[in-house]
Image (cartoon, rainbow, N blue to C red):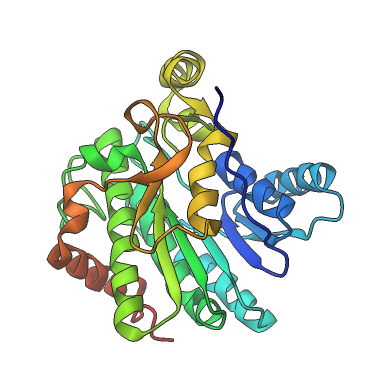
Length: 304
């Protein structure tokens, strides 16, 4: 018998910011819009953003959805986005740190000089959460959902190498970036608890979902992963977004926890609680990562 698919509870009157306009970001926006939330999709490509808005409005007539430009590979762009949100002065109930890139064959650098996967998948989201924290703290029960991956379990943690690895290996750098965002999610919850902030920080992973991420890995990787393996052992982007929606809205989702598919090897299935990679539970390493990240973005995180 087929299990009932998770649907977010009513979100009327709540406001969500989601990074990434396609794939998981679009599907998460669709789920939240259907539940009544106002949604701000944030991404660097305005044309793709407009396409996503058109699709969302067609799927959910009257939906409160909009697009804002945000380039996570540029800290100035992240700061500009956060400042625009602060000028609006509207509380944020849900922040989903979703956008990412995966395994570009050739090494690329961000506008600030960091390895691109580190910058987009981790550091840009660290800065975004930092600079949006006043708006998150202004709403009781706000949630931050940081999207990690099964790849976290294959990462070799080296905080000295993470921003700019001397020997660039595309897959290894991707795994590290996804481990770091998981460590961030847990450490943020610790700091929210210590400071008495009513913000919950959770992590989610989509399993093996068919999204546009595979396109950056080259034509052969894209064909093997998205055309052959996803249909066999994975799931659609819509199903991959369910753990994100669960973490963002489920009444029984708990801060500091990871949610992902509970089927075969966490690659597909209904969302439920999963285990982080062992380094995520290393509080000393997480504290060091946090302090280094503060230095990289040039601000004391979550103090504004």
